[in-house]
Length: 157
Image (cartoon, rainbow, N blue to C red; front, side, top):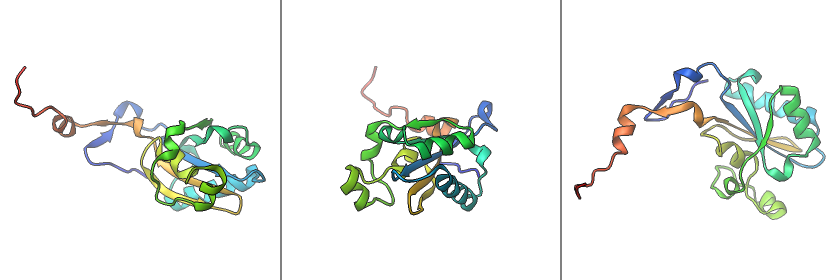
């Protein structure tokens, strides 16, 4: 699946490389198999394949979660942590429960959004959440959008 944002086009040197980011959240009892099933279902709904995944991402506090690590390992991709500031942004599907339990409104969507636009909003199972974004680093501004960012000031040199 290819999503083009206004004013952006794919960087030809990066064409064909995996550009999908899977944001993940999980309860402590979530197994790797549970998380993988959720990821596969979310990918299928979005028309994506596991080989499209560049990496999985979560909150730093979840990096040692055995199920998340097992799922990323089974996919053959790294499990990374998004920066803390990513978890204060607005997300399409905030969770009051997650906010109450861990002090942030989202893990999966916020983590995915930290790397690019969402292709699939949060889906959930009994023990995990998953959201999918497209890695924005694979895009660069075209000349029209670059021109629109030039200064229009007439203040002089």
